[in-house]
Length: 504
Image (cartoon, rainbow, N blue to C red; front, side, top):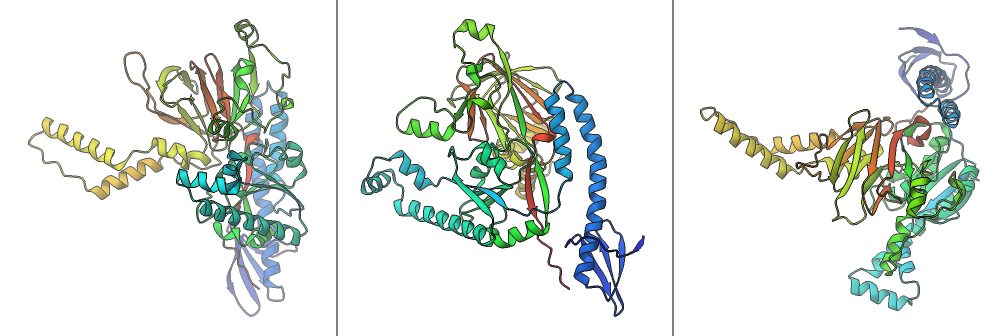
């Protein structure tokens, strides 16, 4: 193992550990196992910082070499699309740039609390009438108001921390049209203040891997906040910002799914699920267009007729202006109506299926809805094994079969469920078919599995592609969706280092 003398390099502050110290020298080791001998005249902390930067530079050079090969392969795959080649080059530069995050301008997106949502629903009611309606419904007015005020308090704390540190900020709320592309481009980073829903909703506005997205969970006692920073930073944001400015974090590029839709232009307009829900609660059963996207985000701005002649004469192909961070669900709008479609996984033979829909997720979403679709309940596993044992005993009546313990069944159930979880930065998708029909007409050879590419042709009448539970696109008979993961579509997020307590 090589022993090196610590050289004078720009300062950093982690990635190395002190092995031992003597009166005249001390020895430190970097994460690549290189040993450095430092004289006692050097301040230990400064020496450690210098060595850490040297180690980081080596990591960047290695990553750049490896990444160049990956991107070259990707460019050859997508050589027909000049825009994709340009994005690939930008992605490589982004990966290699910068090892700290000194924020000067941030866009802050706050969640819409349940109290705010209900107030919008009953906007013409007085406060007393509003209380009475909630009481009739069995909801607690005071509980909703208390949670709302707690969120506002955490939002105020966030603003005070940013002002104290001299960071310029613009504040918007989830679903507010003031959160625009210009706002994203203006900011050094985007911070969400809410839970996973706010994080996912905000991610739809970030179209590339350049802009970091950081989540602050404003209600850690009620929300898991799996995509947000650990709960301790909700009331200790200064520590998190210190770690970002000092480079005590790692970039996590969460893969996202790109959707290319072909069919009729009118079938691919975005629908805001939240606005749709509000309209239906008010008894207005009509589509609520999405406020997130303007017409200039679509390549073809021409207005087209919905007549059948136009549908057949003017097909189109378009990349949707939103990427899926968690999952995409394809299915009929009415849950009791089965979904009919054709599906092709990678280069396999297409299948005609009828089911309750298809869920396609990323590694980020593999711990969410998809996880619960794929997993089996322990009672189902127990029943299945008991049946298997009875059948086995009939075939071999003289063979004594050992009864499985309930703990073993539970462990097997959990291990099976966890086999569907994969890392957020893995460039693959997990698809799962809900309640597939199995008969003489329809079949499902693979109800779940991993894919690099997935194509679904709709044979539905009132179906949608629901992206991260936030935005939907109509997906009816004849429309085709191509799902894929490309490196330039990844979302840049941070993972803070939790063991950086170095001292002199």
